[in-house]
Image (cartoon, rainbow, N blue to C red; front, side):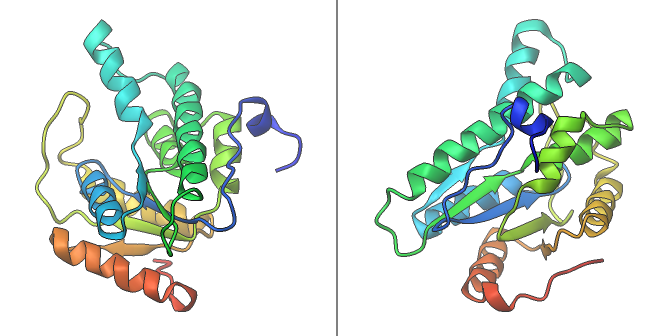
Amino acid sequence: MNGNDATVYNLEQHTPESVITVAVLGAESTGKTTLCRDLAAHFNNLWVSEYMRTYLQAKWDDEQLTCTWDDLLPIAQGQIALENKLAKQVTQMSNENRYLFCDTSLFELMVYSHWYYGDCPAALEQAALAHHYDLILLTEVDIPWVADDLRDSPHQRDEISAYFANQLSKHRKPFQRISGDRRERVWQVVTQLANIDNISPDQS
């Protein structure tokens, strides 16, 4: 990035070199949060929650309103601020392996912006494409959909998942597909992290 909107809107990513970041992306209700929690517990490391859910749940509770275009940049700011804060905290831990598991990223917010609005705020897209993760995971649609106040696409998960894969490939973001039950998913990621320098990315 070069002197751009991402800087103006405080969307820059600040990840210390010693921290290995893992971004978990995917359609709604495909186990992203559970996987991040399980991985953080397995490695005794930290995970970044999805700020959008906190933000939109509060909006729903207070006003019975859902996400609009005007919410996108505040959500992006909250997400990357939380990620940067926790990335710094990881460096203060005594763990041999310093991992930070991110329940979504600005790339996911960008994808959903295009999905719902057919466009994306320039600053958000600029930042989303510039941010780097050492490993990007795409959770498969192989677990039951669970309803809540915010989820609205129980019958479009396969279509949205395919759109995620398309956008990741389009923007040359190597990724790995993750499937199976909770234990299987954790061990898939454990194996990949053990061989992170030799991973053959899924570009399909």
